[in-house]
Length: 313
Image (cartoon, rainbow, N blue to C red; front, side, top):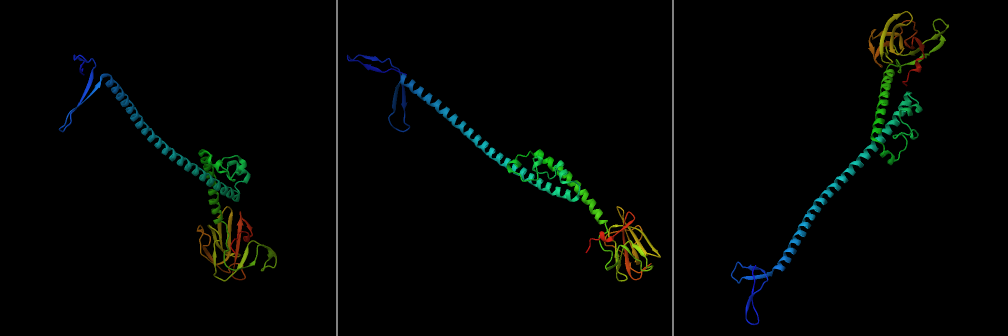
């Protein structure tokens, strides 16, 4: 900083008391230098303005970058929120579909239960199998509002699924047992032919007296195959004066079948047979007027009408 030299009216020189800042500009090429002189007060004002502008600019830049970071975080959160909404929507749709499938399975299981005779429709409501809207359960077999279905807790859906699994397991055991029973039930014709004498009272062709006929007589060609009418075990094979060559098969559950007047026996005692296996050939042994098969079905040792069991046309 320096003062300037001035002259008054009388030609006397003096130094000014003002202090100045001088800024000398020297060009890098040939040319005259330039000096810019600024008073101390003006420099203070200029520095204050520059400092204030710098602070404002720094604050603006900090705010700008902070807002950029905030906007980036907001966009990220918005994107995550959209993804979460999609996941939640997918979850709700999955629960709704699962609930609908469980309802369909419940209805089907209910029908199977009734068909199997395991439970009455009223009793099934107690365990939640195929229960109607009046049961008050969150998952029911009746028409459902999507908004209601979507609000069903997952724990309740899982509980329903477990109940349904238990019931279907019971049904599976039942029908497996039934399939075994069906396989052991004499449901087919023992040989091809036509009935000449039915089950019940008749006139005995040998004595002319009324006697009870315990089976059916099927007339057919000599040597025609005779088959087991159900799965079972051959209990006895014999040849006596009345029945001729005879086979007795036990099918379990008190069921047994007898085959009389055979020409040839093709099985042995203790042998397991399946429905449709050939066990002998039609003959006329024992008390028989011609080639035919006398066929009996017994339940717990008591003869019953075989036609009640035959399902084959």
